[in-house]
Length: 304
Image (tube, rainbow, N blue to C red; front, side, top):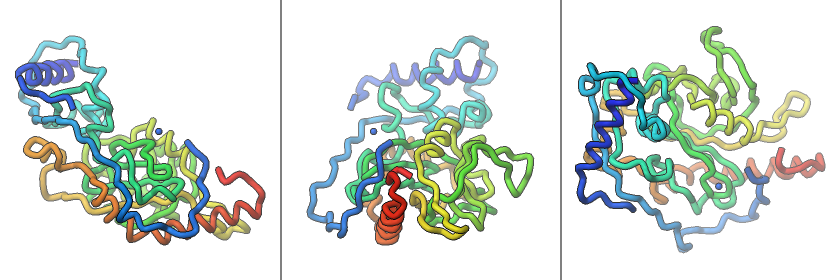
């Protein structure tokens, strides 16, 4: 507990010394619009980015301190989100990026916007960012969940492209190493063996191409996203679209370290999200329409 206590005390002291700190939504699949309207002239959601400042605390600064209760555990979700790790791995890091305030919603410390106008006709979609090691899940353009991820390591990076969720398993074993237990595993590339699931987050890309998640995030996406639909072992309808974007900078410090010099350096704007989504939009809409039409023939809920 000495690490957590010291970390909390140092950040508390840093916050107190700042005299000018500024305080600054699972739904059914929606009917598909027959034509995607040009959103260029439509009012875009106004992004509000509260002022947050960051600093790095290095391991020597918390070593050798007396062990006691860490009152800042109430902020642990924020600390592990910023550093793209989990509570187990946090204390193993050589350094941690910490904010000067903990009074904001968790989304304020993460990169994805709460609304993306371009996604208004997409019932569900998940976007994974390799560069920022984060994901965002959207329903009709509204953010429902975002959080940290650790993607594929340098020798097995997660390929950036459009995927669709396939089959899922409450628990499975990795085909790479049978000792790896994957909880809430949702496959997105059947032949490449890529999926998102719960597993340890060391704070950097460390997987064999899969996308690692915290347990409660993996549980949510496992129950929220739609599986593919097979008929006579053939694909009848695709699942939820998943965009994996960009590449991680393996040869440089973790990008969240940039927050010290530029607190706005890890924020996706509407324009940047449009740039990520637009190349895949037509394919996503077509797959969504095909799924809805197939479900109509079965006379079942479009939830499936």
